Length: 465
Image (cartoon, rainbow, N blue to C red; front, side, top):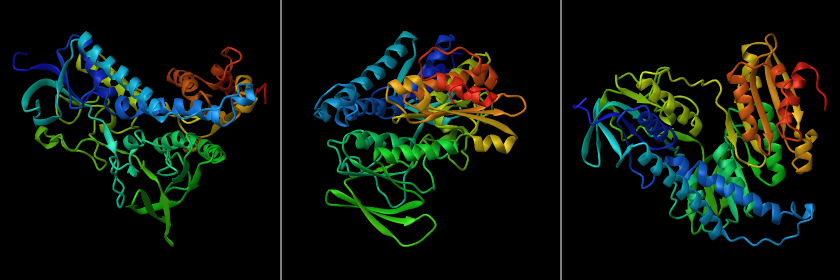
């Protein structure tokens, strides 16, 4: 072992990387993590999941006060937006959580190598000009914003921005155009709409939220329209130019046709993310990437080169922080000789709009391709807690195999859908049937009763619909 500086070297300190490093150290392996940011936590904690949720939460309070929801409950207020303070609480949340990761590194004796790593051989990387050799190297470098041809992002100018720039806007834009109807665009578009911006979402496909259940996509579109977001579906952006303090976009029908222009104060480019595999000098380690820029791995997260492992956004699968975390734990355990497993069929996804949108497992469309299914739906309008909270929008949908009754997928739109989906994921992880969920006693009144009711609808024994 004296030939190696470390048993495990993790490249990247995002949710997958820092968790892998901590778990490896807990298992008695000498561990280091290379990270070039000034703070740990990767995109998620610094400029992604965490700061966006801070802004979503704060903007919900503002809209509840400004939009009359609080007045309807007998709370009369006249809110005044203090955007600087709102940004401040976002930054405080980020500082606290990233600092917490640094504390955990020290507690678990993980060395933080400050700098961006690149391979010089299959077992050696260079970090800040220094060669570091490790018996095992885990690539957990994450992903970055996918660029859109003809649209140049410049966060410093604050006119054409990506998700990072959209979190830092110094004032509420009069008109924001969001390019892309996926999770990031809808979340950040929702923030600025609540704070007073007109928001237009331009989506190339015929529906928003690609990859989600068809009923969810249609219902979400209706809800967001009712909230004031304008959608231009089946439309592509071919060019965006900054003219003065505004942007002028050129739009065309996705199927071809006459172009039109659209003016905006801020344009948010959010068409997806791509793996950060460029710059790692993977070729010097004997590795290559697939057509999507991902590193292929086996079930244990081994790459084609012995001693090199990969997890998170750089490998195939959904680009989700919790997926990366689970892979980080499993990968570290596999390196230590244990059995680390991630069930990629049961990874929930959540959109943190209001209401929230969540799903796990198969969509109804995908399930039907595999065989006959049974489907049960329950509207949140009929749920007692949603009723008392004035949250009528949405539903829960349970999809089960017609023969075995085993649950194949659960999809929901509700104010706390992101929390509700955990029950469904746990049930599916252990092979539950819709009857298992239907006959599990749920506390009353809770939003989660809607999951029980949807499962009861699958069994043909609904009570409240």
